[in-house]
Length: 226
Image (cartoon, rainbow, N blue to C red; front, side, top):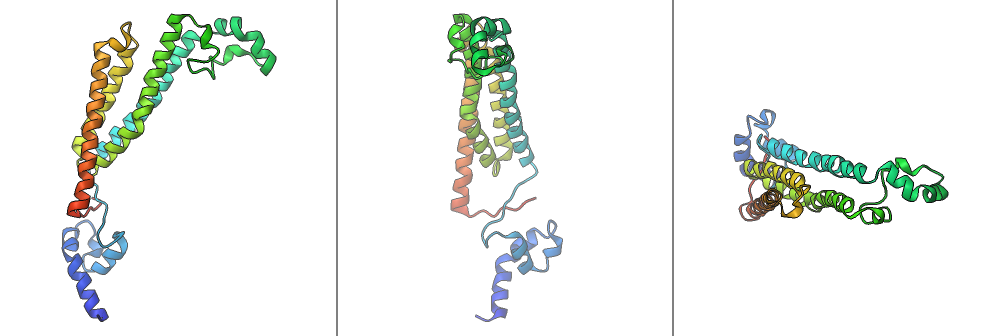
């Protein structure tokens, strides 16, 4: 096959894409060979993200912020409440200073995460309060990577749906965090509702991510950045 034939074949393969994208890439509209060279990772694949994908990015960012805030405000507040300066000084002050030559009152109970040596001296109510706060944060940590991934992947093809359930997940986490700290604890109905919202939101975005992958495999959909 000579060079002229090759160029003609490439032009035929890409002329439809050039026509569709002439408004997006005007400098390439008369040069499909340059379009292929500059945009295509391969002759079959281009990344396509619509403006609505911005909602997906925002929902993922909110989830990232929320888990950090949960650590600071839920766990941090509980830590200051149970590991007071008086408690630490009276129970571990001399021993801590002996081994570290430092004042234990400023440690806020670190590195104890709820089941360590400091916690063993807590009364049951204080121990329970602190461990519930830790559980709220740990539970979020267990799921955050998964919800971010399925929201992002599902959002490639279904940005409105995926971002909606991303926002719903953040709302469910808020309910879970607030009402788990109530007197009823895990039995609180609003805490349970928050957990259900989170689980359903994850399940829906998981399905959207799978559907997105199946479409890639079966239809060979071309994606452009717009």
